[in-house]
Image (cartoon, rainbow, N blue to C red; front, side, top):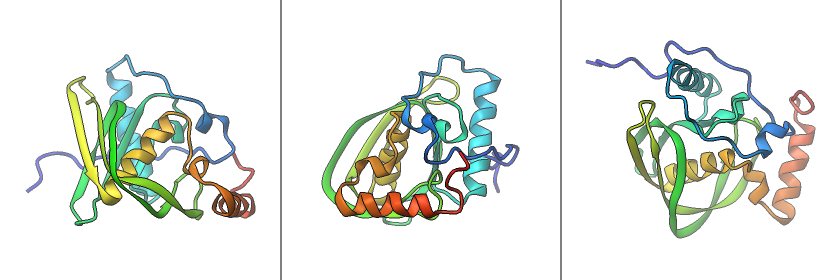
Length: 181
């Protein structure tokens, strides 16, 4: 029996920031207020992520320029990881480099083979300011690196080169949501 509420169950779905919006390319600020507005933001981010059928979401993807992300992501062994990190720092990214399919809720329907390390460690704090350390491998490591990139003002297409980058950006320009930032 579950004794905790399901993340996002009392949250509101917020509009998604789409590729082309300057908010996605600006580094996010450090969270200093750990009050009710942060709790509401995290709850809304979970609701928004679930509504969009994603596995991770950074605050700037809902128009809030703060260093916060949420996740509900499996690793390569199908172990489910659910949580949030405030003021995250990617402290380790190592192991083999894997090029795998990567998408983004801010570029719906666009996917490209993106290189990421197979292991990542992120440190930060919880909603109450307590220390958090999350380690991921495989797909979950990809998620952790992807969300940390968002908070630094990067989108996964910024990591692409050559024909992969050209193809992904062309697909984004042709997408029905393009121009609706």
